[in-house]
Each structure stands twice: as C-alpha cells, then as structure tokens.
Amino acid sequence: MEHCHIVTTTTHKTLRGPRGGVIMLGKDFENPMGQKTLKGELKKMSQCLDGAVFPGTQGGPLEHVIAAKAIAFGEALSDEYGDYILQVKKNAAVMAAELVKRGYQIISGGTDNHSMLIDMRSKNISGKDAEAVLGHAHITVNKNMVPFDDKSPFVTSGIRVGTPAITSRGVKENEIVKIVDLIDTAIINKDNAHKLAEIKVEVSKMMSTYPLFAQEALV
Image (cartoon, rainbow, N blue to C red; front, side):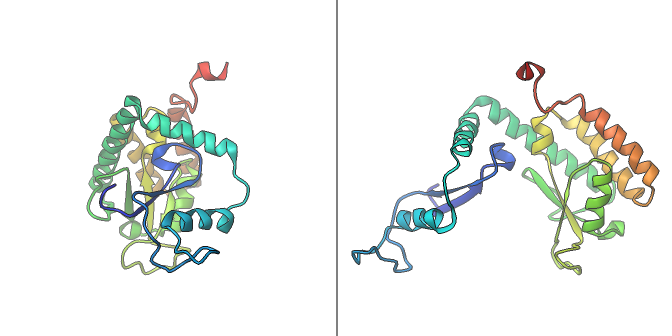
C-alpha cells in the first residue's frame, strides 16, 4: 500500500477468517519514538511492532488460528472471493436504499461499502433498545453511537448493520428487501412480544434455506 507506512485490519468480518487482526508494514524504517536495542542501536519499526505483539501483548501463539488465517488469505486471492465481496457491496447498497425508503436516517445518506450506520432517533428508539428488539426477532445488529449523539455509549442513538455474514450464506438483492421489511416490522412492533415472536419464526424459516455449511461438508 504505497501511501501508508502501517496498515491494520481484522481477519474476521469481510475477510471471513478467524477472529483476529493483522498489522502490515511496507518498507521498513527507523522508529520515530527513539526506541533502542540492548546494544543501543535504533530499532527498526518492524522490531517495535513485533515486540509489541510478542511478548508485549500476546502470549503463546495459537497455531490453529494462524492456519485459519492462512486459509482465509488463500480464499481472498480466489475469483470466488471477488464475486462474494462484490455481492456484499450490492447487498449493502440495496439495504441502505430500502431503509431510506422506510424513513430510516442512514449516516452519510447511503453506503459505498459493506456496512451502514443508522440513526434511530427518527424512529423514537435508542440503539440499545433497537438491538434488543431485533435480537428478540433473531436479527443480529449492534448499537452504535452516531454523530452528535445525545445518549451515552452504553445506550447510543444508532445501530450498525452489515451484509457480509448473510452474503456468505448466499443471500442476494431480492432477499435483502425482505430482510429490511422484517427489520422495519420489528421496530414498528417493538412493544409487541407476540409479533416479534412471529418475525423470529419467519426469520428462522427464511434463513434455513441458506445453511451455514453445505450439506456435503457435514458428511
């Protein structure tokens, strides 16, 4: 990455690997903090990063996680992964547009990536309560602060929604419209436990056609 000295990212989420992270360093350079080796020589930045990870913050290496990361990187090099990540973006664009149609305020007005931040104040519900309501309907989101939030980080005014997980299961644009309908219906009926239970059944029925694992992989 020619314009960056150091880049960090996760290995889960859009990469679809195990939970963890990566620190990437391009061209090595002398650290600007003045850290030195036991011999009094100025450390390279790579040495500082390596030392910060181990023994600085991490104990024994988890070989199974390292192997899983290798698999994830290998998948990311495939044409199939390219198709997947394009579908993630398509699904997110449709989801944002459909939410806007239903009166939800998307921060930045839409999305050009895999996720979106929704200000729930126009729906008279906090991020914390929206997360709980949707959880009762078996729809997983997380509360998130929004710009100029008037609630605490433990309550928040927004929720964050993304499409990588459902796209990994095979969901495409037509199903996204249905998912937004389910989200909206749940929020509208936030105080109706019976309706939320009905939505939960509908969600489970819909996603049962998109299994987490292919049947042949379980044999």
